[in-house]
Image (tube, rainbow, N blue to C red):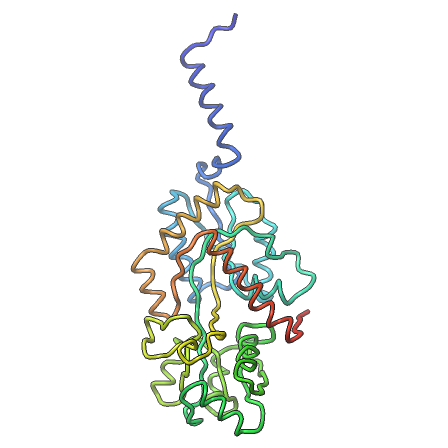
Length: 325
């Protein structure tokens, strides 16, 4: 008959517990670093905010959180790497409107789609503005429509390229105002703003933080912001809803997703740490100060954002027959 000592029984119990934990939480206990794949280059505004959030999450998880910048191909490189990563709870993707939703909706032949990821939680969103040269003498969206009707030729609006949020937002504005518009692509927003000030374009859909100094100088006029409520940083800027165009509420977002198949326990653990970090008052103040809106939400909130993108932007893309190679 086999004899069991107290030590052997404790060892057996420990082995059993480890066996139970292995599928769900062994990696969480291991101290291995969690990797956040960011589909943008380092050193920018979003990269800095993600790193700050990652540091806060690391403290709560008692586990290193490492940011990996994987820029290129409008975010496709980073998204592709994240989707193909081992679903072990150690790799997550900082998804965004363009790299994830719009690429999937606009492009055939990608190795990933929306179902390649599990939602983890939301981080922040950025509103757009409808902005015109101050010399146009227009003060709201109805006056913009009247100006366009009288002009007798299409309004020119700057975009950050075909399929970008700015390109698609212009299509929505054109439809809701019932005016003709033509898009003009730019490599970056500063170049577009220079041409807007110079009167070479009629409209710009940048974030308010990038335009406020030009408005203060009397060069530009921000007519409306596309958020559902007025932004804390720009309390005097009316929303599109206030001006009678609730259909123009839209923004670009950033959130966290995991490769498909990542254990639910790991997703829940990281989601909780993310939401706790996002409730930090100093972090929220920093986001508001640069024109972003903090978004505190878990898996359901992130999934709801993806569903909204599919419905809203998907409809815009389909109705306008927009596709990208």
